[in-house]
Amino acid sequence: MTRHLKIAAIIFLIISALGFLDAAYLAIDHYRGNIPPCTIQGCEIVLTSAQSKIAGVPVALLGALYYFTLLILSIAYLDKKNEMLIKIASKLTPLGFVASLYFVYLQFFTIKAICQYCMASATTSTLLFITGMYIIVKMRHRSGGVEIKK
Image (cartoon, rainbow, N blue to C red):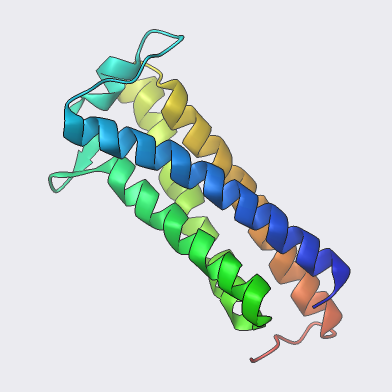
């Protein structure tokens, strides 16, 4: 593990943890029937909208599972030094990034309200995507452009 890859993996872990805390907070509040305090108007509108669930499952719970998966993979990578783990985590980030783009679109153009917690999640997804792509590029560059199979 190179120094740059280790630093990127630690950053990935921290961002994943922040995303998990944000999404888990929203998921727990959903199941408690609470709306979290919001410094901008719109959280309640977004969090109770028809778009806040997919097949009856809160989007926040799906987000928490996504971030938790990335968090576990990054912890395991740092512990086991198995590059396949961080590679898998990095390759999952486009899924979260595209989902975040879609949910931001829904907030602006369909729901016409903004949730600060949802925007925080979109920010963490974007940062994870950038960090994940950096990790993939670093791994390819180090191997001379050939993917490392581990």
